[in-house]
Amino acid sequence: MSSIESELVRMEVRGLMLDPSSKTPIVVLHDEDGEIFLPIWIGAFEANAIALRLEGVEPPRPMTHDLLVASLDHLGAKIDRVTISALRENTFFAVTSIVGSGGQLELDSRPSDAIALALRADAPIFVLRSVLESAQAAELTRSASNEEELKKWLEEAELEDFGEYEM
Image (tube, rainbow, N blue to C red):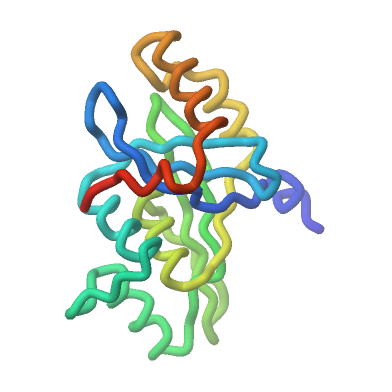
């Protein structure tokens, strides 16, 4: 295992929810043991793309993320994985790794787009351990009480609780 891979934590999408105060969509990632949660505030269009895939809805026409995955497939390439790679000024950054006959390509991505692509390509989602540590230390919500309430809710939430996100 390379040194960078030892710094990666595999995550899965737990679900989508709305921030109770701002009504901004949040995609919630969790590790395989369900012990680490990472909420990422995202845009409405990206939340819709993620929700469609999570709910198994096939749109009548391909969405942008579907088009990109189909294009890569046609070219003999695939999304190998996505990695949430940085947190700067309360903004997450990601890298989408694509593998094809020409080798590996890493593209700077918004986490929401990277996650939407990973879901469509059945590719793993990783977060750098340093990002998880930074996110834990950062004040991503406006007040400590809101942060504590969100954390408590995430820890106690059942899967059906995430179904309340409306497209």
